Image 1 (cartoon, rainbow, N blue to C red):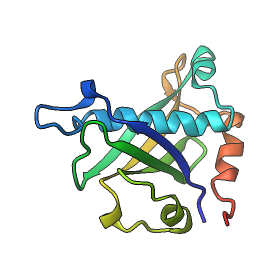
Image 2: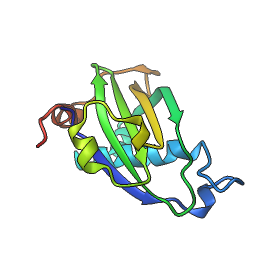
Image 3: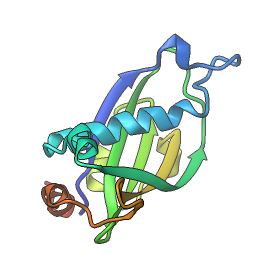
Length: 152
């Protein structure tokens, strides 16, 4: 079973559109916060990587909106690494406006009626000096190994 990470935050007024829902581009901001939280849990300092001339670049993003998230909703973002290679990570993000921890932690496949948004994001490690893809630094190893541990 893949390890699931949780990040929760309340939707702020500047993030909503004129219809009162979370502006579509802001979903990516919230997922970036969830991903950063997951990295922090494994002592992966993205700022340090950047100072060493590496970056994680989004090369693919598949987004699926099921229902709106509204102003002041408490949203729960569930993230899991679903694939990786020498140079890339693929992360699934599930957003819900209610706590689904017990369900999501035990599920390999998530019932889409329980979530409001799903995204699959692929990141590639880039060498900023050579301007090409690069192997993921060794600091990612604990995250990748932990992502496939069993949870009970």
